[in-house]
Image (cartoon, rainbow over all chains, first blue to last red):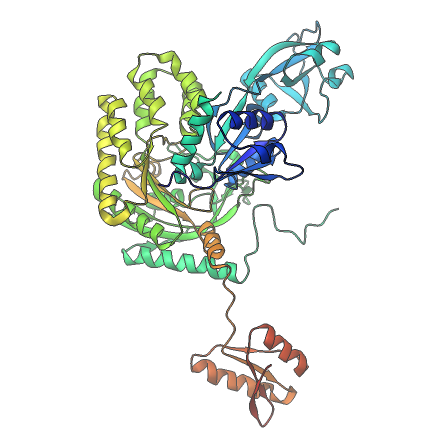
Length: 211
Length: 400
């Protein structure tokens, strides 16, 4: 098996992309093209026989699942929400935050027997969380600032990604329970893992050693 | 009301011309291989009762099944798999058949994939089932046929991977996990989710089984895997390893040493029916296995006949797609002769055509009234000449 096969990696645009490019730099890769990318979406890392694709988080999963990209860097949040079939081989440690359940400060969310309404951008994560508690809840999918939903009184609580909690605080909301921690993950297409084993293992080891 | 008269349902598609040709090429090639080894064809209904796919050895989750009801309100499904209908057949019409029984099938499969996942909901699948027979001999027979099938694809790069579904239940049973935890462990083990796997297993520090599970998930590759596994597996798991290595060596001896690999991180999902050796075939350019198979010794017992069995299935659409990509598209061939007739020559043209097809030629009519349009049509079909038939005359006119 050839150790230097061409490999294509999908990165989640934005913060995870920056963190991964930083990691590549530490690994000694030439990231000039990645840093001066302009509007291009497919970029080269010279000398590494490696192509980098920049995509939205959920698309990273789609590309890896379908084999268009061999590996991908994507947040655990997207993995939990999107599901799919691929190998999730490493926790890259960066992009750390968490899913949490928040309500208006002082509200007794679990009190009473009524069905609660929860607003979220992540209906699957939310459904799964309350299923594990054997609770019936109504889920409202919100696309923008979820914090608005309890303020506008259409939801009792929200399930959302929380980093520092500042936005919650400024809007009179508070975390009442952590749902699950989140960080960037390295995912691998199931066929690439077998066909390009050495290359992928080398790259993974190198990435993990430089974290 | 929105009309859907111009769409095919998600996950389905029309196959046209060279897409059909590629699919038929694959299907005929596979059929030839199966028949050359003495396998006989069965065709099972596209519609089955839901219960066929919901038994002890294997159940399909509701989400993946296309369901409808019959006139009596009973739940029916579009066949999501051919092995379970064949197991049903073994429990009924074939229950007194002489074993070993060698069957093959070539039919469509229906699975409701998640929305917009880019996967086919309807696809052609062919495969074999070897029912009854000595375990070692049957495994080798079916593995070697699967290997022959993989080689017939002539792909630029391919892998034939073997594993065993016995490791996981043997090792995990020693950990005393609750059902939900066991499901999680299985999921992490199969999906090579190393961080989650390590975290869950860290509770069992000092357990030989726990450390073996953590390592097995990572053990895949070539022959070297066996030596490594020997150092991490507890003694009770060694017989499975030895059996697998023997199969690996046999496949190498059969000339597969450049393609065959092993993955010890395989475990059947809760709903899987595999009980022993399992295998998968991959070809470059297709993001999922194109061939999957393995031993299933308990499934047929669910239908009332306790007999071991093994088999595999091939996703023909996937292989055809790869074939088309590689060949850059195979044009539908132009006929040997194209005929145009004027109004009085139509009957004569049909007689002439009969004569030519009788000689084994392919003949097509340019069925247009205007001769100029007929010539253009002939050119578009790659013809070099057009045969013109009138009441009294048959002439061949070269086309420029």
